[in-house]
Image (tube, rainbow, N blue to C red; front, side):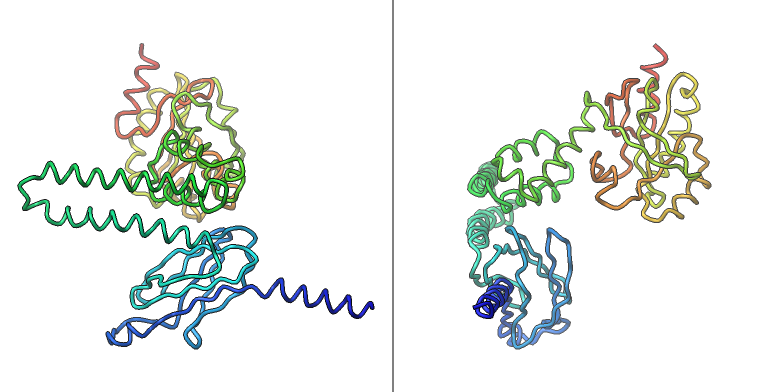
Length: 366
């Protein structure tokens, strides 16, 4: 009896790990076109939750890997040469197959994932409006009724936006809906906290608790932290000598948070303006806290020595999940500056050139 139970457990275990992701690569069309420079045997696949990347070789027209997902998971499939990629969605505990046609890396069909089916249906609807809009844009230059055509393009864009919102509402309880919001926020790095919150609030409590729901919530908090009127989250980082500096310790002064990097040309161009502002207002109660996002500490150390910045300069080079620019502040591009009042409240941001000195003059010279 014990042996029978053991055998059943082994069979159960084997079944658990039997689920696979199979990608069938149809090369027939590519073969007919006799294309050069195409590698249709080597692909990259990336799990967009773990970010793990595997290099896979096509054997007998297909790629097969284990399906070890625990939640609805987006994957990226990329052809190595020439580079091209697509996204697909896998459900846990199911066999999934995807049929892809080369040389366009186009999805022909899929089985074993309702989220993928829903996503493809959504894309098809979007493509219909895109084609109509592109056709109008192609002919608008020579058309007499340009205003009418522009209105038509606006209508198609509104329809696409409405379809997107409808799709989020349909997928509000799962990781797919959350990923759609996460993805559009990544593509639109300048999306503000208000717009992102409008999308985030369409997720249910369950949807907000998913992996990408948490990611969107984190970004929204980071965006809000830099809004005028918000209290800047405090942090502690080390300078070139290894001394720790906390933002909280600078309370009582007006502080400019300056996010930069040694390799950033526009950042370096701002240094003379920062020096002038610092020399003029430091004794009156102004401080600068430069936060470098350099990955290589040596490059930052050389830059600190080269540019002779007289204010506090620290580096944010911890692991991604521990960086303040990944957990507390949203810094999609640099230079990025945030001006805080004596209590640590944001009173301005993104100063360039003489704009900072002009703002400080209003504070200290009146």
